[in-house]
Length: 258
Image (cartoon, rainbow, N blue to C red; front, side):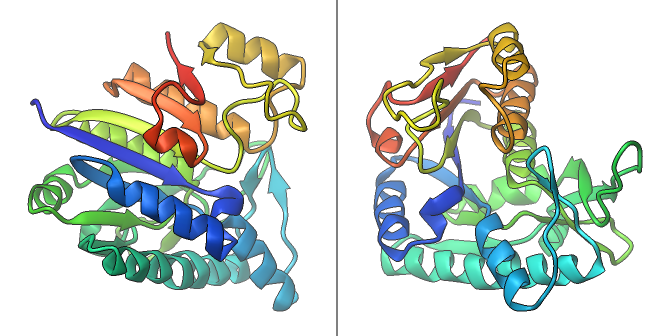
């Protein structure tokens, strides 16, 4: 196991504006070696649901997914965003393949158990089809994975894109040396969300918990970091949270550690 695989999860405002998406895809295309892209698209799903008159509900950065919202995210994630990204990568001479978790039985999940919150049709990952995915990557194909999974019984499920990136990274760590990059519009995890110069260069779990208790780390950053730490505990070599510049400039962003 000596081949490097870079897994990039992209989300936030990068996906919403044509110029930032183009810049991101330019830099992603220039990454050397094997690579895989996982995308979000929550803002686009929210905008579409508003156009359709469907209310958006969030709890700790995670979307409540009723039956109508599941239709919206399936259309937006698996269709609009995924194919937009795939076609743009093809224009950059990257042989990309758009996938959801249902395609090739890539990611199976189960509907999240109702505890304090009923998340609806939200899936928690059970298994990743590592062999099929690794075979694609070894053929020089770049998978572009939308944040949708399935339960194996015909039910699609909405699964957090950070979670899918982490699950793929952990599963593929048995086959490749994995670097996982969470890429969004900010230069890293910030002390002050309004100050891009307040990047926290290094985070371990105790520091994360301290900042979370103080309210410095909140909302959508919480699942991102939880997934990052879980992936490192389960075989992923390196996890970085950064912006577009951090894709190609070493040392940018926030690096996670033990």
